[in-house]
Length: 351
Image (cartoon, rainbow, N blue to C red):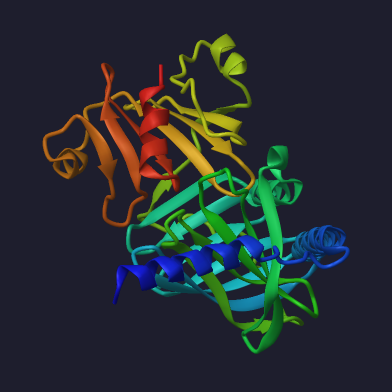
């Protein structure tokens, strides 16, 4: 191909491009686009409003509806348990294990009793029902505007139609998320799933069957007497609402100087036993974070899991994942479902 031909072709293309007209923007293009964005924004707000109404109804139902259910709980390690759940809005809740057998928990709104046949343990503590209700209500408030609530569609659990509501941190946040499957007819929670920031399932609890007109026995919600030969464990922990309240009682509390946005202190528990233990609990309406300080040598299991290091992420068998480190008095565990880098940053800021 000659140079003269290439030069002529180049000239024709240049002239052609120079004479080309830019594409015409359709009339009202920008106005239509802005209207579409506003419509999408309004649709998202309407979705969130419907989702919050579903969750509010769920809370009201859990406080007012009597039911009996067969429940399965699956942990992040794949281990599952199965139990009968009986709940009466006035009398409390009863959980009796099917798999494994021999574990009974009764909360009569005054105290909670756990009876473990295999371990021959009878453990008493303060009722947890009010605290559980409070945590769910936090999710609806959306602490500091950090939480986003979305209606994601419908599903069927235990043969019953359910709405699926997704609760998570906003785009700028890092943390776990939760899904609630809410019965369309009654508003009862039929399933709940929690996932880590990397989408790993941390817990999954759902009903296999549901009975809405149960016939409870007179003693279903009455804690049994202590069986012969069982070890009775009483709740000897003192509770404080603030750091200042604990300090006035002479309690020295280790605490972090940095926490992710949205986390607020819920309470402080102090056990003055052979090995004193102080535990701080925080919540952001979606998940919890706890810092445990123990005045005793680190147990051999944790030492092995750390593999000679003085600090690091550990995952004990049948235990909760945590960042663990040695202290001058003993050791600390920071337990939570946050990313590893956030757990380490919190732990490094503890004074």
